[in-house]
Figure 1 (cartoon, one colour):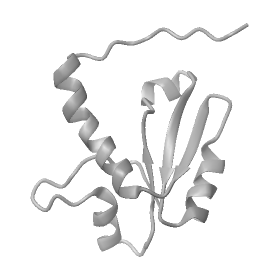
Figure 2 (cartoon, helix red, strand yellow):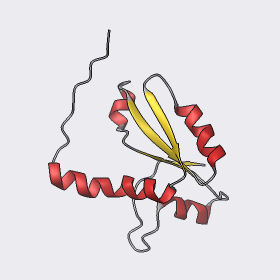
Figure 3 (cartoon, one colour):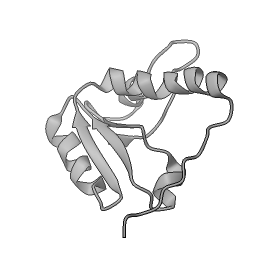
Length: 109
């Protein structure tokens, strides 16, 4: 099971992987986290993603599936850290900078 869900449940403060494990037969989901921006992936710009799971073999399998010329996947075991960082960065980033500033990327020749 791979989760790309961001957030924290409002009333219980549960992370998405905790909720998934309650309702689906999965022990160690692989959680995806930034610094990826979907728009960058769609446009084929270079970006990175973190595949976190307590099950290192599952994280490795997802890492191998996602790695490409434009997307670099990193593997980690800190599921809590990846989920909290993904959820909290929107709370911190948006009020502090307003609208994101897009940096232009041009590929090397």
